Image (cartoon, rainbow, N blue to C red):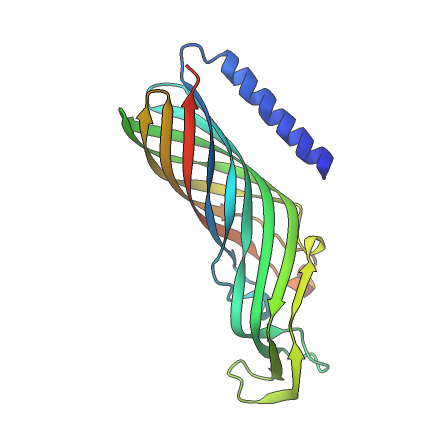
Amino acid sequence: MKRIINSTLASAVLLLLSVASYAQKNTFTVGARGGVNISKLCCGSMELNEDYKFGEGPSFGLTAAYGVSKHFSIAAELDWTTQGGKKNGMQAVNPGSNGSVLYADFDNKTVLNYLELPIMARVTFGDKFKYYINAGPYIGYLLSARNVTAGSSMLYSDKAGSHVEYASIQSFESDKKATDQFTTINYGLTGGVGAGYMFAKHGLWLDGRYVMGIPNVRKNTAINGENSTGSIMVGIMYTYNLN
């Protein structure tokens, strides 16, 4: 994993340096961004992985943009971001001895940490006060995954909790590594809007976007089912114009 991360970082640096060498007449900006990622696991294919709600996590990284013209630029980022989702309350658990789905009342959170590389086409308007729209594809590499549960409950045969299957209290206190349950590569589309103000060569921006994962991210779908990722990212970005 370290070899892949180092290779990705080296490639990103070489790309930025090569673009900068051609940026004598056009604008070339670099910067950093940070914010919150509000995400959930979507499109559950079985009861065990349905009904995820949005959870919050950090997102931060480096950004660069090459201005092809006054209004059009190509932007790229290298971000560390948290995806996943949570379920609180009555939910399905592993099937009972007869194969039927059982239910319990507890808290359940899946945390997926990715290194993501989005590349976006950006259209910008304005002078000192600027605003933009951007969109493009992204690819993500899974750094780590955890499944965190908390609480205790009896086991029920129905989601309403009206029929007790096992009256003894079961503990759901757990924090387990789950990297082997998820695919290494994720990809999809991202797009959004932003606005900011330029102080000479410095820029301060508010950025918001939606990130839609396309493929199923779970392994062993016969047991774990299928899920894709989806999130809303809101952050603050600082940029510096090298020209």
